[in-house]
Every structure is written in C-alpha cells, then in structure tokens.
Length: 249
Image (cartoon, rainbow, N blue to C red; front, side):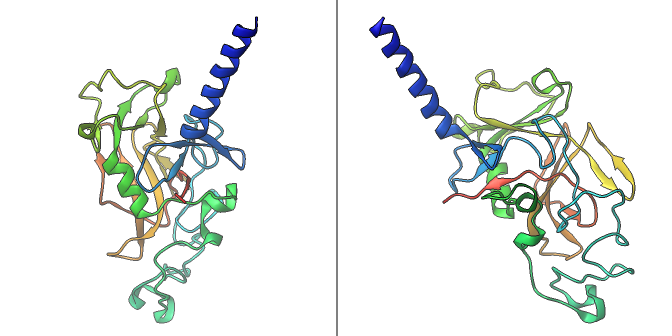
C-alpha cells in the first residue's frame, strides 16, 4: 500500500511539474509556454472567449470594448472625418496637424490588459515575428472535433520545423498531436461597419504596434487555409481578434 501511495504521489508531482512548465493560470485565464526565446507565454483562447475554439470579441485597434459598428465615425481615436487624434506619426493624418509620435499601445488602450488585467498584454510586433518564425503552424478544418477552422500553432520539436506553415494542401508531421504544447487561432474573420466577414475562412489578429508605413494601419497577423501573412497591416478601425500574452521576465 505504501509503495502504491508513493508511486501515485510521484506521478502527481511529475504532472504538476509539467503543468507549471508548459501551462499555467493568470487572472483566471490559461497560458501555454511555446518554448520561445523571449519567454513569452501565449493565452489559449481569444479575449472574450471561454475556450480555444470560440471566436471571442472583436476590437478596433486601440479600443478595449466590442461594439456594433466598426468604421471611422465610431472609432475612438479619430475625428468625424477620419483624422487621427492619438497614435499618429505623420501630421498629415492628424486632426489639425496633430502627431504624438506614439507607436505602441498604452495600457489604457490595450484590450488584453483592460479585459483580463494582471500580466496580460496584447503582443508586440516582435512577439508576432517570434511566433511566426519559431513555431510549427498547421491548418485544421476541425479543431479538436469542434468543426472550427484555423491554425494550430505548436511548440516546434525540431529546428527544421520552426517557421513551417502547413496548409490544407499538405499533411502535417505525424509526430505532432493536440497533446503537445500548442495554441489554436480560430479563423474568426473580422468586423467592418456592422458586418462580420470571412468567419470560418480567414483569421485576423491585432498586435500592439502601429504600422511604420501608414498610421491608419497597425500590425496584425492574417491567414487562410493556404497562407500566413507576415507583413500585412490591418486597417485600425476594423474589428479584429485579440490573443493575449504574458511577456517574458
């Protein structure tokens, strides 16, 4: 009996140890460690969702609450004619020549921090680039039997797997399964004006950095079943998904 109890205790300790390394909870929301050099931990579901396959809420860049209409007239940081009033690097885009030079969202405008608190933040462009370059991406038409389409982003098991994007045209490596450390990014589409577009076929996810080319745009990652786009800038008044992170310490 003592031997059985000892073995059970050891197994429990090993499970808890593995959980503390690969997964954890911050302010009631689960994170996963994908083994990235920065130490960034990624949330397992979108802001506004309660499980990985739910789409969650949609946010204009720099706004912290969902709404019914997404355009310049309803955007928090623009005038009625679409001139910017915050996060602007070129005076020609600002109201009355306004430019503040801000290129990264402040906490008050961070949808992840506002809604989840604690250490949660919207990811930076650098964290986006790391996720794209160092993880193994696999498109699925049916995540975990839910019928939801999107990309499974795995912790890479080999150097050759890093940065690989497996579309629906190609089979993934058999060595990867849902028991491995991963996050799932559902193809939740986006909101423009009062409409939801491309849900189930395309995903758009905001990052906290303003585009360097045009302040009307901010950095995002977008994808469909064939491609993951590296350098696409999202129109900041549109409603995109937000996936939170905990920055490395």
